[in-house]
Image (cartoon, rainbow, N blue to C red; front, top):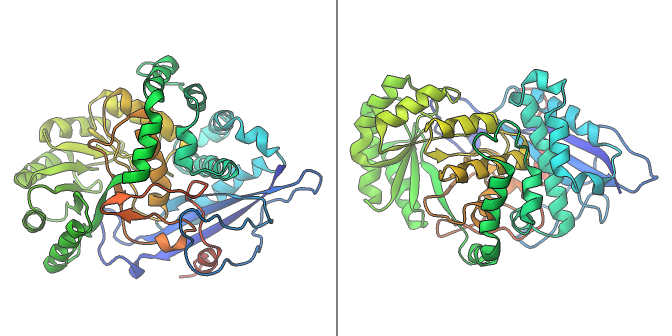
Length: 458
């Protein structure tokens, strides 16, 4: 079999359909995805170039976990991935994804899937693409989409969900997936291998624990700015009833409003439920410290993105100034090198990886290993299109093979856009249910792709 073609779709979901609040830095998002499908063909039938092919529309509705969708070309699966964006610029991201993905056409699929570490290095260290970064921004995210699509395909061919496929890989194979260039001052391949081997004998126990209990989640649903006090209280109460042990509130508009909203939330959820806060990059350094101190009486578990996400020194100063409240960041972190530096500087105490911000599964694996090296919990970002579906696999793998624990770890959950995915996330009593369906959870329903395909108008 060879990689025979790609399908790229610019898909956008107006947020007015599901979100009547906003955050400080993104007041008018139209949640979007630069979507990629990689198709397979039989050697000798020829290969096709870029283009959108009509393979029919799946039956409306959502398949339950354990079902496997019919592949476009009969019994050959496809690899699916996306980059999450929020509207304008999605067309630029899509063009970047297509330009990288086209390089796969005609390659033997087994050769590619057997060396996804090599594919990552080839794409990320392309000397011409690196000029556009290096290792950041539109091209890095485009590479991530291609890498993630191949992981989705690999998991489907193996008949396993991605988290389980990774969790059952030998430690040596996992280390080979990671590029340790620029990391060895804090994490060497030997140290990574030692950490992974530490948990090898007990991986099976944690796999079974995931199947029984799932993985802890927290909800952002109550906390959007713009909600009335009555709606805030109602959504907080509903979150507790649904079994969540943590909620998150957006902050940063007005300190008096934030204190009032925090007081309402704390009164509703009580003292046992954790409340996180998220400033969405709003503040200057001194302002952040003073603002968070004014919220301290409500016992926030963390302050997320208090300032510019690239400002390492500011985050470190804020972390010192607001302790013991922790600083959480990472959803906008461009690469593993920045992640390393934030950890070295004590600039974050909660690591928030993102499934589509960096160069795919491989780079997120590097970041999981770095977080474990510094004993920092990973609590992924998962707002937006498909991020819940994608990132759950990374956290579950982290629990099984890297950190060995769920203590202090939660995955963000938002309650919109899951209906567009073939295997949407499932929650039970505030926990992500471990996915059973083969793949990475990133395949969208053809009907949704067609309905929300961007026409360039509006």
